[in-house]
Length: 175
Image 1: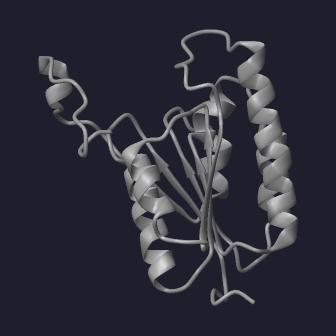
Image 2: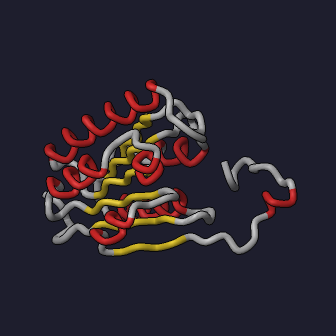
């Protein structure tokens, strides 16, 4: 049985850095309280340093990736759509299991924007989540319907970023 009485929908959105980082910080807080966490990463693939660190924290956290790791610029490839659909199917099974207290759907907003999944798919998983399960959506290009259904919306807005002056992503900080 979950330690949470009520689970809300949180959205971390915007063009600024920090959406996934904020969600992973919430995962750490939840783990510290003894909650079980499932992180579904859409579009992404690879053993990022934050994933390596979270995997060290034990069996109360599971991270799965449903993407090819290639940034989508225009029309997604069939493989990307297939991976996202498989992730969504698995996510529905995870929700039904009621095993996890916190579900982080990393880059799901982007997956929706590029039509890897449909708005109806997202509404279905929100409607079927147990009342005690907290759910977090991250990513740029969030649909207004997602903002409306959310209980908490945080926008990361870029004011200034050293990437603009040619600094590449650094190990341990951005990757």
